[in-house]
Length: 140
Image 1 (cartoon, helix red, strand yellow):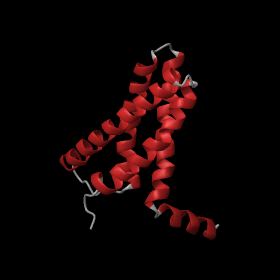
Image 2: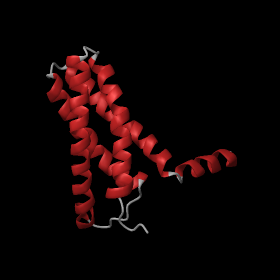
Image 3: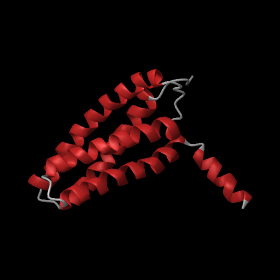
């Protein structure tokens, strides 16, 4: 049992592993929201935008608190990183919306498959932005 606990703690100390773990939940929020909205009859791009915005808000909370363990103590401390986070996510949202549109409408791919494929590019870009430009409060 102690070995398992030590292994989990060792993995948790790695921000890439934490990012992949919580990124998986963020992706799940995005995909489930998209799936539900499409099943409710929302148009492709509207469902995609709503699911991305929901995932972005979820991602800020888990990335700030658990992944990059930003040292923001007050709401005011969160203002700058939140604005940078939203700006970076808007860039990747354009990539995601364009990618889904291209794969679904132009390449005639299944909408869930197209959505899933774009997640890999977005995941990598979001990590780079978050690690090096956004969550830097209290870091050396």
